[in-house]
Image (tube, rainbow, N blue to C red; front, side, top):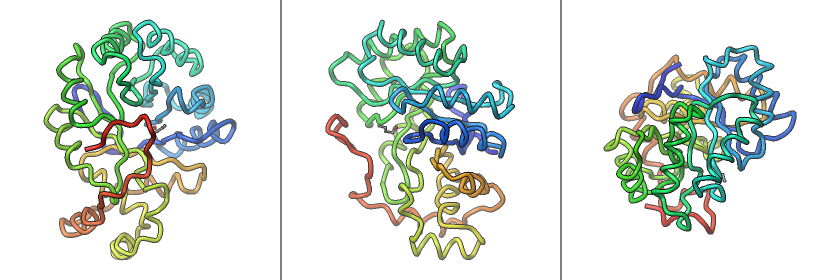
Length: 272
Ligand code: 1BO
């Protein structure tokens, strides 16, 4: 497994995203993923599955220290005392003393960013998390957050896949030494029938999803594909035995379009 290193964190290049996984399915998929060799699990308060993620981690038998676990604070807990309380509640649901990475899930313009970042940094100093970061932050917000935060931010987790151009956000992350973690990295399955990815895949005996994930990790990006199907877990992790050539990387990059975003909400910031 490759790692993406950023501001002291060592993030496994492929993780399991758990957005929209719930109940026993979630616990079972987390357990199976860890048994298959995954060492990076991503959850969030808003996913309502932290309890099951913790259960799956325990039943896998994999040592806690060997797993990189991320959770995210939802925007209604951004006032300093709420943030600390909500993180302690997350840890109680996970039944763990700390997570590896704690993120602000979305920007919230109604609470001063300095206050929220102060509370996030405090959570780190209290030992509730080893590292802190943000998610769904634009270039302007990344610049503000880096300037305001007293502890290093290690990542910005955003939607990223071949159909969405994230060059500006990537450049801002690079400028500040933040890793980019890609959610929806296989475009919610839309890449499955992509002719370009399929053609590249035939040359390497890989599926379009594997080409897509390889394209991401080859850019030093960590990707967290979600699946509820155990057979897909192996497919998504078997991407470390081949490499894409420069022209193949360019062909995949050329699929990006301004209309490629799949996750958007009324409360989202104005995207770059
Ligand atoms: C609302 C959830 C978006 C991805 O984490």
